[in-house]
Length: 498
Image 1 (cartoon, rainbow, N blue to C red):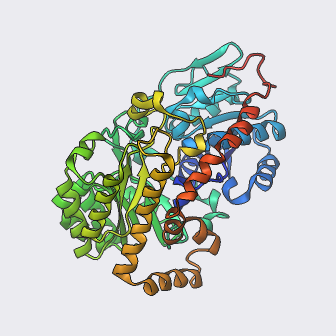
Image 2 (cartoon, rainbow, N blue to C red; image 1 turned 60 degrees about the vertical axis):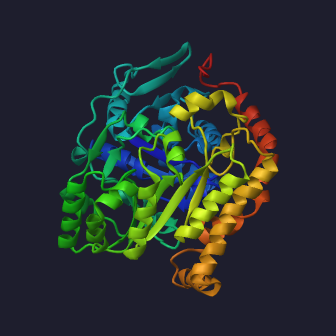
């Protein structure tokens, strides 16, 4: 059976999807699981191909099933446009929507033209779905689905018990060969994604990862990680684990296995500051495995702030972890949450922290309640917009204590402060020489630099009008989307819109 997987195009606003441009690893994992059962798969990245070329490519494949990945809330309206095109060009194809956002809030996706929403890990659900489709069944016996039926939706119950990650097939990376050179993070291009673990045992109120994985945490063995890493051609690897080194024993075994394999990459990892403080010898072991950049979701600069987001950490460990990484000469990127109810002094405190630590690579996310999180349950009634494109963590969707223009002046001032600190620490010339080298060495394209590189992003984000402009155009976007949502359903007699 032929299955085409689509990744929705990039939107027109800055934010979450602009900071990194990465491969659709989830689709590769699902495709790998289907290929093991003899099915023929295709992946079309509409962010690279564009809608016109990409949809023609998908239609020419003549798929019997089309799967659309929706990971981010910002992709919702774009996803609906893709779904509409799928049904126009491939009216007989079964339309399946999956991904993190669709799993968090499946009822939202029970729209015209959507046949099924897959809830959970795709490679654990899709083989059963495809097999049932081949048999001509009605899918009620396939767990992990929400079926869009004329009389309403049908929930088939949770997916079966999650298997060991080592038992899953390798990702079908060959399906994105034509796109592989386009993926990047900052100066590092080409970039590959790699997963060594899934889930998170912590329960931060702004995060949906632990809910998606039902508070489970699973790891791949060092042997499996090395086997998968050996297939990756890119010199740069972003490890997608939400907390790398959560198992210190496995972290050490994995570092040892990598050194023995001789594989050298530039790794970008995400971990916690308390792990770095307690096991800095582990960080040193990984430094010997290649170059490394560490992303730290510090979130807040004081203990009261950390408690407010249920972080289960203390500020002193955040500061100490930064110093450890600086002493080891390891690149790092701290990230902080900015609350919409902040006042000028709150922004000043964060600037003083940056001055004290010299952490000029810091990034700043606006507190955003995403559907499916505890924060959404708590603050949903306070959300001031239905424009999902604004849920990109650099725009506020909650009321601000200050006037909106003043809030964005302060928020933009944080990004400007990181630039000023960088130039003070590095020198302005040195900062831009690195940028020019990246272009000359073809580590990144000019388009990518303008769209997503940290210096370019910081320049853009240091202007308050960058954010205000998106709010000003929000009503026009909503009008366009409402006309799309009001379109009559050509497939169902009665739409099961939630």
